[in-house]
Amino acid sequence: MEATAQEVDAAVRAAEEARGALADRAVRAAFLRTAADELEAAKDGLVETADAETALGPVRLTGELARTCYQLRAFADIVDEGAFLDVVINHPDDTATPPIPDLRRYKVPLGVVAVYSASNFPFAFSVAGGDTASALGAGCPVVVKAHPDHPALSEYVAKVLRRAAARHDIPEGVVGLVHGFEAGVELIKHPLVAAAGFTGSVRGGRALFDAAAARPVPIPFHGELGSLNPVVVTEAAAAERAEAIGSGLAGSMTLGVGQFCVKPGLVLAPAGAAGDALLKSLTDAVSDTDAGVLLDHRMRDNFVAGVAERAELPDVDSPVTPGAGGDHTVSAGFLTVPASRLATEGEHDLLLEECFGPVTVVARYEDEAEVKAVLSRLPGNLTATVQLSEEEAAGQGRGAELLQELTPLAGRVLVNGWPTGVAVAPAQHHGGPYPATTSTSTSVGGTAIERWLRPVVYQNAPEALLPVELRDENPLGLPRRFNGVLER
Image 1 (spheres, rainbow, N blue to C red):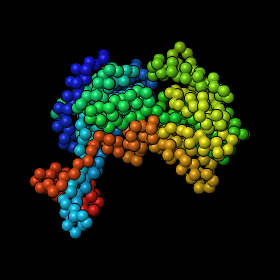
Image 2 (image 1 turned 135 degrees about the vertical axis):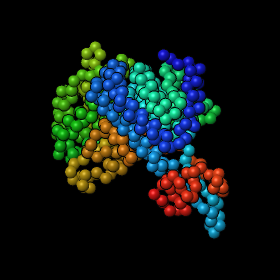
Image 3 (image 1 turned 120 degrees about the vertical axis):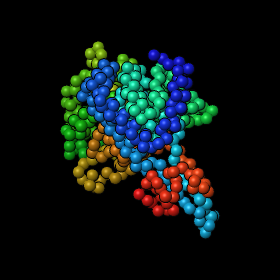
Image 4 (image 1 turned 120 degrees about the horizontal axis):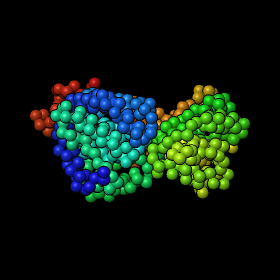
């Protein structure tokens, strides 16, 4: 199914030709809602196809499809509201220093967006996922590079989206689809592609990021690459609720067979009796976890080899050994190591790299200095979590200090929770310092739409020539800042 360079070119040009059909915000919003309706109507066939290709199970996939439809409708609401346009109008002011001319600013769509599907979310981060929904909401057609783990599902979803587009007289080229590694490379290089969204590995994402920057005209590349998602458990928290923390950690690290981008991959836990109790709870819970199927054999092989390489390092123990389960499954487990081994550069740096699958590393620390030393060596992450005692959460002890130490490391900082589960909400941020993401934006939540827009200002333009969004009478009823006053 590898797309040729000519087929990639045709898909991009068809998307470019569909831009005009997305110019009307009302049409875009209606299209997104129809897309959600059509996906729901095709639920049974979609879930069956997805399960055949991913083995994620009908329950998980049905929930993910519901999330995908929710995302589409959420962006439709954002498009209707119009605040994402960031309309700002300043009338002339000759008394200012320097004088202010008539200035009117808003945001316009970038153009065709290349979307690179993820393996682990065949609905929510794929053909109809958040990148596609937010790009269409911004007024940008998309060309999706399908993930090789679910090609049939990708074709099915694209067909549903095109059917929804046709109901609003939008050309089917508004959602293009290509398959194959080389097609993905050709896509990022195409001169009509104006931006790209990616979810995947550090290696693949960095290669595309570099290609986007090396173009004659560089383009924005919003990539989610990899994340360790550290957790710090204070000694007081472990003493207060070791069993709950251990079982909660087990549930989070094994959820979806450990194939979530926000899986906690490194846990700083105290040495001593409180930490021992936590490890016992974690051991019991992980030991009761059934073996599961990873998304493909390449991932399974990488997981088995990765945990074996980590387990062979000096001072690394395996209270519950992760690795191969049956012929096609993997068993969950975890490794332990003295935190001092991670405090300075060395062979144990491998433990600071993400291992995709149901495994986590518990680093046992002796004091706060070791916690600080390890945190200072971590790369950027999507999330960082702290487990505090009741008193620490109330402001006593190191709670506030730990939050300050974790904030530079991640885009989402959690207290007494677990990072798996990314709510689709206006305040959500799913991103973080590199290598978690290649930009400061989010791929989940309402502000994801901002990735596909750019600001433009009209100066001293006659009212009759202005876009309708920037006219004084505000016929569209848009939220805006008018001569310094926020109008809703």
